[in-house]
Image 1 (cartoon, rainbow, N blue to C red):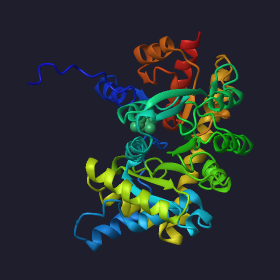
Image 2 (cartoon, rainbow, N blue to C red):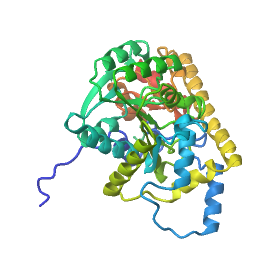
Image 3 (cartoon, rainbow, N blue to C red):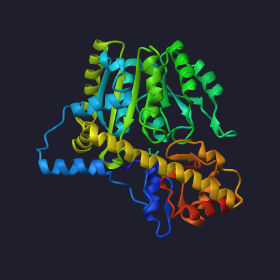
Image 4 (cartoon, rainbow, N blue to C red):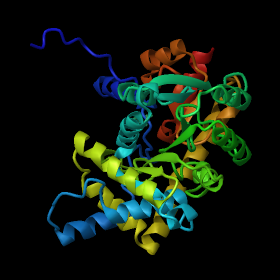
Length: 398
Ligand code: LMR
């Protein structure tokens, strides 16, 4: 029965972690997957999250099903974090939000729903480059994939003119997938003025903005990192979509906590979208799980815990900034080519410019894992491994 089943290729990111785990070299370092680790090399359990977790354990609540679209308090608090507490969109009831299994399920649920709306002509435009799973999720949902220019390898910055030119040619109705902040894999973001210009083009061309926000708070702060969403909200654009994730911002990777928000033209449209989102979720995984959402809602729902969480998030953010600066400094001291651009990139990742051959040398000769694209996770650097990584990178650049 299963004889015709072929071996699927390993996942470029999570598959690399499997290879890393199987590597017997004790000094190995994983800069592949996007996970923040602290100075001790551990994934932190945020004190605010731990506090809520202890209270939940003490309360010993039964584990009934959540509604199909998740925990109501979680959805409300998510809307406030993503759109801003004073958002006129929320006041007007224009946003349909559902808790999802990480940001990935938000992408897939939305893709399935958007495919139903667009039918045979469903098209999505994805930045070149982008997170590899974006392509797979939309292709699997039946979309035709298009690309728009985004990254300029020569300047290590955005190719904004190329981006506008490519998107200016897209057919009306095309979904345009955008990274809210901390672009994965490049770490290159647009500034507020560029967002305003881009959103104007999206509105004029009748393209559907779809913002993926997986790193809110990892560059400048929760409000600043949501600039894309705020600019869209203020633009008067009728419809857009936001997928967001708490994996990184709450250090809750394995709890799979994310949400899908779809903005409609009015309250009635949002209600219809909510009903459709529920219909799609029911056919894929029925309803989401309770624990992670209860943790996030517990923190965001308390003014005191929320303020402390913002500080914890700020701590992760400043540690990453310090690691970027330290890495650039050490590479310069070792006489490596100029890596100063790493200080300008945002979030967990740096598109280092290292070639596939250099990445493979890092892995084979130094037990340091990075993605073939040259993406390295700077959030996995710490004072204990910085010298080793800098020396290895300098060595493969010689
Ligand atoms: C990454 O890009 O490394 C993360 O988003 C983890 C993942 O699921 O790929």
